[in-house]
Image 1: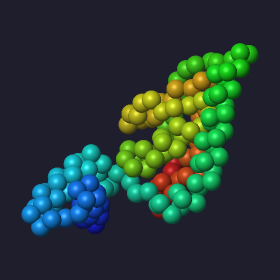
Image 2: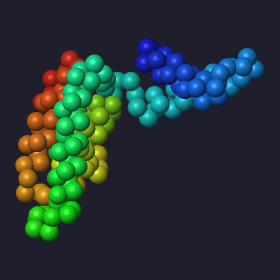
Image 3: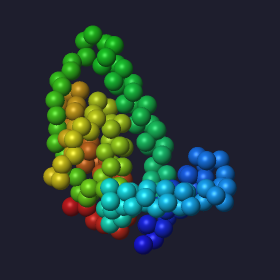
Length: 159
């Protein structure tokens, strides 16, 4: 219930920003819009699907930014240097994160690993398109999962 209330407040605040203030006559429309948006968000991403610890995630921001730079340089090097081999392909990775907020955040974070991008998410695994399948992609993903586990799935042990 707390998740629904928090989402409702967030959608209501967004509505206030979008309409640039609240006139009493518009209040009913805003409440209705926030309620419908809350219902839809709970249907699409149920509360039990996972919590993300924003504080712990913020502590990893420098790592995330550094990996963004490294990934950009790596992709640019591969695209512009004629002698750098590309071995395109797909790698499936079984993550310990359940589908939901934590798994989505993990996929977003790992999309910045050099030469990888998540392209599919099934119940069993996340599939990544890789520029070089010869790289230890699965091992790098496992390291990232361990690094972000306490931020993306607080209090849960990942198998």
